[in-house]
Length: 395
Picture 1 (cartoon, rainbow, N blue to C red):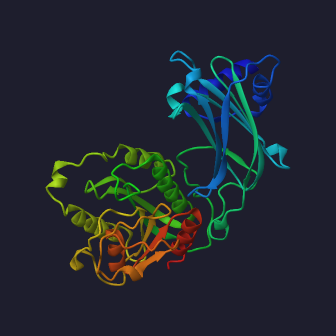
Picture 2 (cartoon, rainbow, N blue to C red):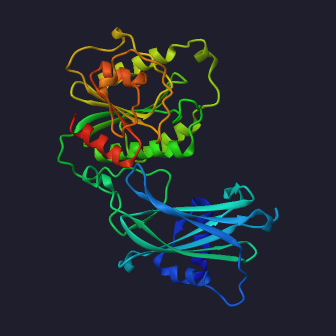
Picture 3 (cartoon, rainbow, N blue to C red):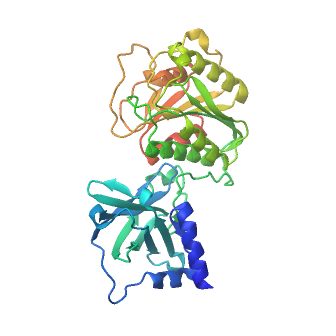
């Protein structure tokens, strides 16, 4: 019966990468990967990955096994990786993970195959044991320690995982919106700019896409709301990609799919015929969303620095002080390359560069400034936590 459970576990690993090993079969699986007399060693290197906080306030840690491509032929099978993580002083929180890695998931890096695995950790210190076994039965083992210090962001936003807790890694983390909050709830609209992190690029990289999605999860999880609208748009394509009028946590998958499906290497010919269409599109989107949330509501732009630097015409946006509050959480890699041309517009005073990158206003920052809102440039989780705290307090 245990053997059948292990087989099912390995089949699951082929679908969802690393999967947790159930407690009732963990010892059996551990025994299957235990050292044996006469086993053949696999010549490999292992790089433990330090625990780094991400934009959803979780620590990501993991490993990379490096094995020579010369050891394998096209007919060789998959690799299996079994990893046990032990929180110091908390044996009941131990977790084991298993992963079947097909050839197509291994990254060719120089003369090696790199086999990577990730997991989430709460604050604390841990010991980790990981074993890789290839299709020929050869084995590579590694033991190391990893520490996840308390997040600097804790005072503004709590860590998503309690200390000494371990969780399966996922590139998309759904927001947990059940936690009560003392702040007054708001009608919220989030306008997500689906664009590359660098204005020089047209393709959204997987790492930057995950960071933007994590930042969206953090916003929706920690801002108290009575209603949530999410609009995904592309200034480059001059179009709305997705609109969700009543957001639910499971909608994160729809947002991720919409971003991934967005054509980034090509531009529609109609867009090329209308080189200033992004200005009209942005102005129309802002007017609609201000009306949708109504006076006293909150509109938050989220995304990387735009490649556009114009200022919207003065009459393109509504006037008056009774409209919604407007914020721009602008994600930038660190350090930032300043790619902006000279700009005489007086919008700089509305940009709050939390990380000190001296970022200049892009087209969205200038629109937000026209609406007497704030742009907050963030590079790190701690800076994102500060931005969320400011939005929550409407300042």
